[in-house]
Image (cartoon, rainbow, N blue to C red):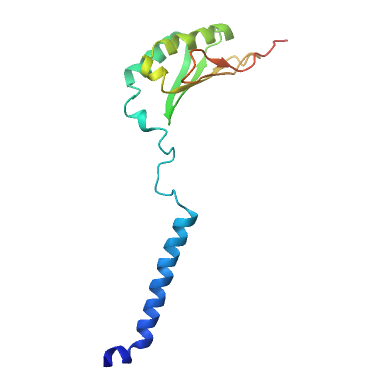
Length: 151
């Protein structure tokens, strides 16, 4: 009992510091409730069930292989981004047809789970490029940016 009376100020100070720390942790949880959760929440739980393999990426690349200078495929969440730089001999309509063929290389589970976005450029900088196409996972066709008129 003498110890408590002798160190009462230190015990009270320690108790106050402890209460302040607990209060700050509670406030942090109130202001930042999802800090420890995944960026995409539960929307990407099926990614592990529907992985995009290197063979599937190579199948997409093989469609464009002879007519492209570079192809980049990356996946973020539930979107497959395909960036293509075509050589000068490919026109807009052929690029769209090649993109549809590339999607045809993917199995149904991938087409029905992922959204797919194409950004297609041409190294000749013609007025009809770049074009952007997007296929939603519930749709069967690619939606393209509005065609530019040449001239």
